[in-house]
Amino acid sequence: MAQTYYITTPIYYVNDKPHIGHAYTTLACDVLARFKRLDGFDVTFLTGTDEHGQKVEKAASDKGVSPQSFTDEVSQNFRDLTAQMNFSNDDFIRTTEQRHKLACQEIWQRLEERGHIRLGNYAGWYSVRDEAFFTETEVVDGKAPTGAPVEWVEEPSYFFNLSEWQQPLFDHYEANPDFVGPESRFNEVKSFVKGGLRDLSVSRASFKWGIPVPGDMDHVMYVWLDALTNYITASGWPTDSELGDPAKYAKLWPADLHMVGKDILRFHAVYWPAFLMAADLPLPKRVYAHGWWTNEGQKISKSLGNVIDPNALTAQYGLDQTRYFLMRDVPFGNDGDFSAAAMTRRMNGDLANDLGNLCQRVLSMIFKNCDARMPAVPAQPNDMDQALLAAADDLLDQVRELLDRQAFNEALSVIWQVVAEANRYVDAAAPWALNKTDPVRMAEVLAVLAETIRQIAILTQPVMPHSASLILDQLGVDNAERDFRFISGKRRLASGHQIDKPSPVFPRYLDEAHADG
Ligand code: MSP
Image: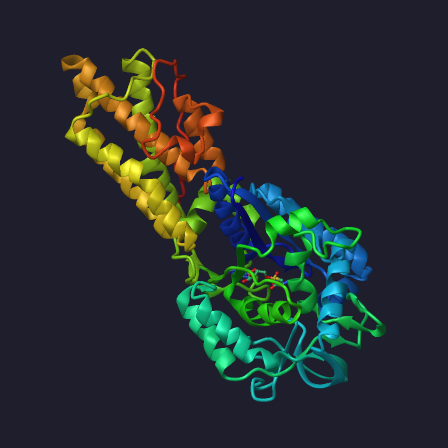
């Protein structure tokens, strides 16, 4: 039976339109999901929307509509984004769904039955924008450390005994060195926990837009307890409820990876595992926190009016180009800056010049000089052929290892090293000159190149699904032979079939201001 892989994005607040930050988190998951599918895994990829809480309630009332109709509308924008970005999620969860309400109430009951929840009073600061509580010392000049405004809240509240989970959390971190990535962020999590944990307020009594606390209609659950639970809801839990699914739960839980942004790591690496331990449920295997994007050097914010709309970006540069740029330009885990110049450089350099020209030159020569028939990879390749084929054959192992640690940009960089090697090989072997002097050798050279391109295209499918499939179509690769069982020297490109006249897959971006790329 295939190994399973369950990967999740954060669920997005529906107080606003989707922007580049949202698209980025989901894109990273999409690339991993696609990679794992090609690598033979039975993948479940989840995304969705986080629809309760004060922030959403306020956004709805500002618009003068009910929270339910507001969330229906905005959630749909996020669902549309998945299609626009060619995301391959298997499920889309909304926290307003019944299956999720049942899961939240079950988790609450388990926490309560085990004695981890008590009723008390909360008096302290709350930031609606962050949907988070802050202590007196954290609030400086009326602002949370995130810069968000805070308000003073005093109300009855249920508390989760987070303070008692310091040691168990620490033991878990020690026993699972890959629990959080990147390592620098894991260290921040550990020092936060080392600093001591305070009990956490897990209900609110001053508004209604949330999941009711079982047995106490005056309270709704704190939106983060509600939101985090989505991951286990979608796995078919609770298995004995009318909407549960025991087989699915057995297959999916615990999740393999929760992908999050650095701003919400604490919720995923401290609170969520504590809730799960307290409820006697297994913990996710890994949480990875990526960095944040700025726009031309500036923090992205609505008030600055520089929010990047993913649809505008893909309309301007192309979908696969945008996907490639976001995964390639910045070491995943670090912050990154979006600039038109960097985008144009990648698009014209890596894509149009390096990979695009390689494909176009090789396929055109096959079309013109080999009678449009795919030549065969030589049975006895010479040293030069062997070096290039070996470099292509080695890629899968390297890329797999890099993606298992979410090093997307390094994975693309090792693939592009082989693109560069293939370009050097074309120049050195000069097949255009061989056409007259040694057509047999010319055909061999072109076949070695076509085989290298085939492997590169198969490996870039997760990042650029559409463009990679165009290249594979042009090479005449069967649809059923585009997964990883067919690369790394296990198979070679079939020969003898007719190919069509090739057309370029990666256009250049012509922009006067940045035309130097
Ligand atoms: N609803 C919570 C998550 C609950 S998960 C159980 C939430 N939603 S959010 O819509 O505000 O943000 C979702 C994700 O978008 C976060 O991972 C966040 O890091 C990411 N980004 C928001 N702005 C971003 C950038 N400028 N750059 C990169 N990612 C950013 O938090």
